[in-house]
Length: 137
Image (tube, rainbow, N blue to C red; front, top):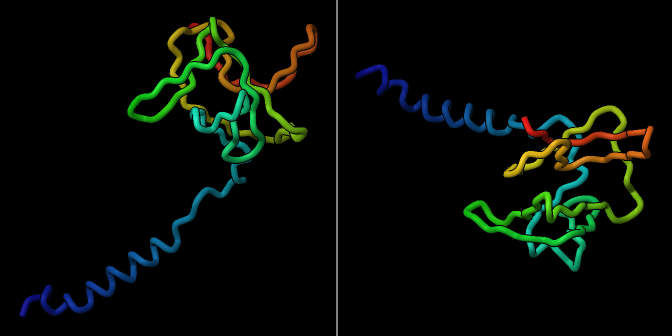
């Protein structure tokens, strides 16, 4: 009798036990949960308001052009047709210590000070806020 034949009745239960232990100890992220999440899809649009999956809705302005590919729908904005998105509602507070922002975008026409998402205040001499953006480089 070989070692494999001797250990086979023990190895299978051991492998299953280890697999279950590893699977049950898997965790998601340790950080805070997302506050806002938008899917830029035509079915999320009600008039000019884009319904949020999580958090506050946003009001879209400017001409809207949708594109569809193998990944789904996209909202196409160009420098000539760019609009803006503004939160609706009264809760516009932001975290004070740290923030994580992500966006899936394709920049076809790089600009100076191109913005994707941000929270800015520009009152001439006083500029406050943050911006996820790009420039010509």
